[in-house]
Image (cartoon, rainbow, N blue to C red; front, side, top):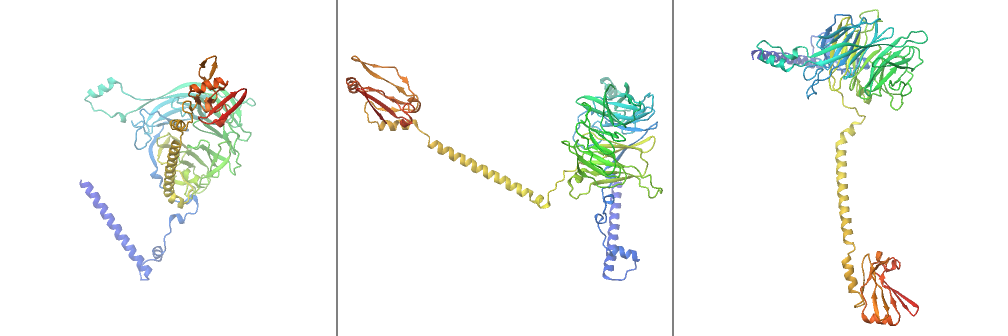
Length: 609
């Protein structure tokens, strides 16, 4: 408590001193502006009288534009000291023992286990695997018959392996097995029952890493002269099948299977210098030369699209693929320019350009929303005072893509010491890490804490301010439209229901207007019946009811005849055929109509109701 009180008193004293200083400066400035004599040197007078411009107003080029402090975004994680000369450094991912939980992101899992390990390799075959704390977790001595020229590490967690390519074409594959250390049930009981001083498990080794020789193969030499200079090596995986891809100086790309079985070689360019590099991300692989680049499919052993040759003014130095857009290569040129291209749909267009911050070539590392660029120190200057040191620049991809005027440089870090190698590693959902080799045996690992920026829009400020009112008006208009639509539907339904034909009412109306007392004929809807009465001798026969076509529409029905009518018709040989109207006699009979046909002495009389 006393220490806290002392700190508070010191802070209060410091605030008081600054207030007094500010008051004195303001008093002197007021006196100078009023023309009062003040005993100050001319330089001090000029500093107090002149208006100090903003930093953004005096920075006209991208190389000197203001940016954030690099210490706010880069945290030194560990300084690794190897016991052998390091020529290659690579990162290898680590499977999480438990699913990630909510909380701040770090380069370690919830149990304290790192998300990646650093692999250091020498040309003589020394291999060391280091945790980010600096501890050596595994070491082995490869036995190459020739110096190692290229090293690649698989990014797959299911099958982790290291591939080393010798200068003469020898291919060595070492399996890397990473297991989380877990105590058995008996060991846990022993720790609980022990009375000795115990050490937390998080302070001891948490991973068991083993390096084991797997397979050895040969990269076939050139048929013409037996020599083939390799320029790039990459591990690639597609649909569970793993490949080893090699680029050479003759312009060819060779593909080997995981067990070093040679699959084939394709020549992708006739350019002098051949293939200079390979860049891969997820299921996408690109090759590059000094002037062009293009996609390549190891499974098909061919290019997926024609190479992109944009006619650059400077040779290509490095290339990576955007994390969020794998079809967007980010290319670094020898003059320090960094360009982003769109290659989707066999296109070859410059999408945007990053700010020109360096005249030296940049080595790139893609992150989510950002691109890190490492510039080697300037070794061409004869004077040590004018030579530019190495630097690390963070480009804001969203700001460069939007072209809204926002500066594309987030921070810039100056590195005073020599840097031999630079490599980065990204694991989704975790903090990105980078490693820089400062001398033959030392490697420094940094965490890069950068929050992905929100997507930039080209909307003007007036539209941004009116966006919410416009949305509210649109929502109200939709509700009003739906309300009137429902009301119209209800009204039309009610009118249709009121005008619907009522069968019972029509039958009642027809029964009231019938002119025949006992032989009234009433029309019914559908299914009409036809009855025939004929005189045969002295008896009348009532035939069985028969369906008629008239019953379909008119549905007429003869309800019966009285005795007088029957005798009259029998006497005069009159035959009456009453049936429903409708289709039998045309549409004239209509609903409930009647057709009467009388035949008397061979003449026919028809009447329609």
